[in-house]
Image (cartoon, rainbow, N blue to C red):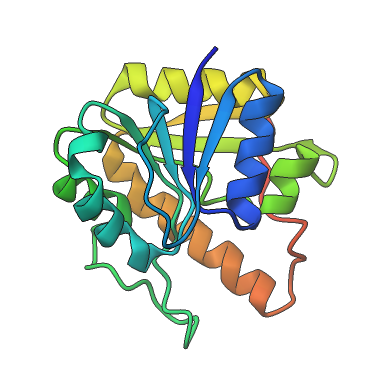
Length: 190
């Protein structure tokens, strides 16, 4: 049985925990302002973008060799008008630079918590898109997600995190503008 450590106890952290627990993984939650020893080989950062750098600094040694999953959408939440990472970059790329010994993946940022919990986007199965440079790490995360009843697709290298964050940005702005619901979103039909 795998152990997954999830930083964050909000809607996304809870929904991701539900998916991986449904697949048989045990889950360790680390809440805000909490210090703990990381137990999981897979570490999900279900936190706001601004929390990535402090977590990377505080846990750098413990993240060495781990699969670290960035779920953030680095969006300017004051204006909902732009991503706050440099053009052509991504939050995941910035995180990878901060924890070079970790296997950084981008995932879960194109799904809402409600669609993870329901395992459906309308009538379509929820799909988690995964980007990263380590094929084994992507396979491990995909297996955890699939075992929990959610589809997973390898979206390519970590460079694809830029496009995943743009897709997450679009989805968030549509929901904030009440053009799609927070229980809806984008689905993948194979």
